Length: 54
Image 1: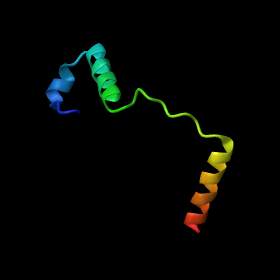
Image 2: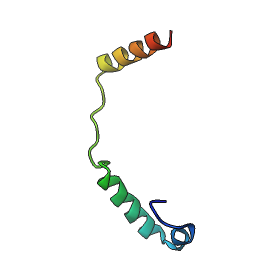
Image 3: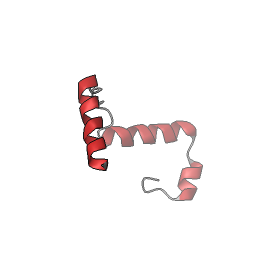
């Protein structure tokens, strides 16, 4: 888990683990939420997916 040994992970307290995961998420761009697609964009993507499967 993110470069830690299993023993190091076992030694983490819950607040430490949550802080570590939050930092990992922010470092990797998890802070920026993508906007939800519009209904039209979703239906277009779904149609393209169905065409690709055929």
